[in-house]
Amino acid sequence: MCLMLYLGTAKPIPVGSHGLLTITAVAGDRAPALAHGMASPHRYLVGIEGGCSCDFASSMDDVGADGAEHVLGTLAPDRRERSAACVRDLIARLRDLLAAPDVVELFAVWSGDEARLPVRRVRLDLSAIVPERFLLMEGVLLTVGASGPQER
View 1 (tube, one colour):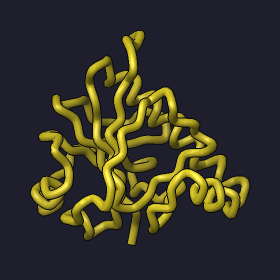
View 2: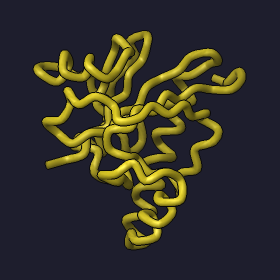
View 3: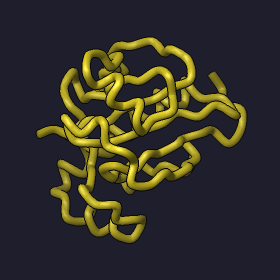
View 4: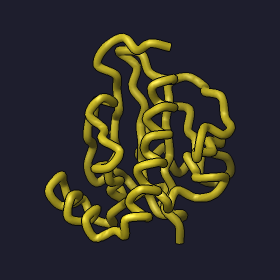
């Protein structure tokens, strides 16, 4: 099974490649399944180089900030750097999409678990995301916003 990172937006966004990321519109059975947990009407898969989202560092448990440091510390250096590179590309793409008070949703689940309800919802400011310390937690719905005007 693969980790899938879904992006939810209020307005349609362009799909395609953005650095390591490949953003595609969600189709088929996954689209209505994601409506159970994501409020945004437009949903996209954030894959890495056309595939799944497994290159993002993740945890099957909601480990919180302290646990995230521990999980990240167990990764091989090349795996940790690959994840940070993916997060840097994600931040760059979100920066292009967000202007205060816009928000996007990020929801990481295993393939086939798209109908799962979020175990927790967390509001996160885009400027607070540090690529080398960012960990996706399965089932946690992140609402990401920009705190102020973003240059476009």
